[in-house]
Length: 628
Ligand SMILES: Nc1ncnc2c1ncn2[C@@H]1O[C@H](COP(=O)(O)OP(=O)(O)OP(=O)(O)O)[C@@H](O)[C@H]1O
Image 1 (spheres, rainbow, N blue to C red):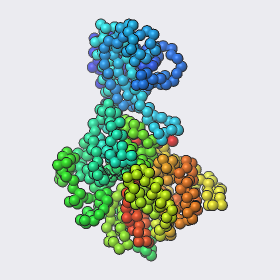
Image 2: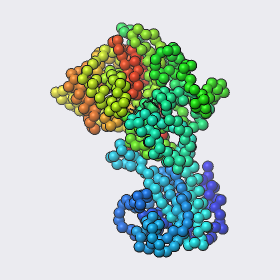
Image 3: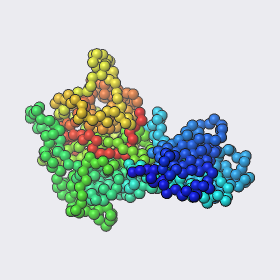
Image 4: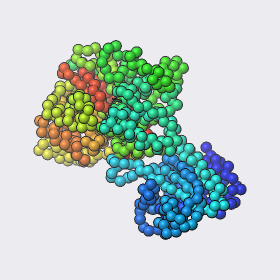
């Protein structure tokens, strides 16, 4: 699209009456140049170009960096330009007579409102800008909002003309914003009122005005029960789904994964991961584990009456069909002419505004646990690919039949300690996020281990210098020096590597059998407040690998040491002799015991036999990656 051509409609006659305001008809990259008053700076020459709005101060000002005026406006005096891509909304506020006090704080527009000395006409507009924070406090807030107030002062006679031109300039700015084609225009938003501290609705109310300002349409659904968002996403027609640019969860990791499953279960077609072998069965080492699942077979509906999580079936049975009258537009079921939507899908994106108990996904993808940061990254149309693991539960218990049930996860699945903590914590939901601490302590003191077998294709890590030189230091307790970590970050080179053009990484089949305190499979690092570096500090958002963490039975004190390392920034939780860490693309699991419970993203999943595989960059999310 020819950007300049869009500005040719500027009224030339009106230009003549403006001494300082110029609009370019298309030759010059400058679209608007004019003398404005900027809050906190005073008179500036403001220039709007196709990608930048910049200003140059005409006055010398005291040397303060950040300033505010009546608590509503903030501008950094050090900044002299903003990228159009960072402006998320522009608003023409008003024009009218404002009285100026010569003695008021120079440049403070709000100061002019209070005292009467000289009368001028003012026209003012706000540019809402998102700034990225690159400091170390990114866990708190990553994007910050800055409202830049610009005013144009003129004598009364000319005000109508100037007003028109300012509006015209704003229209241009809005047109430029409209050209940011990756920005969403229409979203479905699920709000979980029961997530985290039960403040999901409050969180949404706080950020909803940003979407309104940015003219992003939202269809908001406040969930009424567990499984509501899953049902909605499963039964929405593809036609309707494709009318949205994405779906946003206001809640925690559980709600995000519920939505993910609702979207993917019927729309992602892929062979299953390999079936776990029966005890004593030899492993066929010639088989490629990922590519030898059954051909495309989606899980069958649950037998009626079976008490299961709604997320575990990939198709709905009668009892799961929602009440159509409750959600008239959303549930247009059984449309034979429905177009197909498949994944990976470049258009459709997922978003997450945090209000959960853990919020690991949002911390890993936006670098912050901050609703405003997430909202701004969604509005600005940030884009990031995310690996997704497909988990197939083949058998619930030793005695049950083979009945594959599929579930997707963007973050983590864990067995043993993790399964026990989630099972225990469900009894104490009323405690809110504190239930995990309480349940974790109880389970820690039980110190149970479980006999199981895990088989996987081990991808050999690239050797670090320390390993190559055989200098891996070990302490008396089996603690070894951590090899160099390369954490995931915004524009991560590891995630953006095209592996097909690279030499194949060495891989070999490994079987590990024994007693485990826990088995974890992390898709992403899972950073959270309890584990600031995550479960696996160097896991990446879209490198196509799962990280398997096998914690073998060990004395309770050593396990406690491992847990304290997890809780410490810069800790080394993986460097113990009883901890094995492998990078893989798929694994199988078989329990040897009676009870066997997995925790998949905070959901209890009883599984005697289970397998998993990862799909590289299967979905896109509205996020820019962590600024580490
Ligand atoms: N109205 C509701 N009442 C009860 N449960 C709900 C409701 N809406 C959603 N849920 C369920 O609550 C579960 C947990 O929600 P969510 O992930 O938002 O919060 P959380 O568990 O506190 O946070 P995190 O997953 O980050 O630890 C979801 O799996 C979802 O199915």
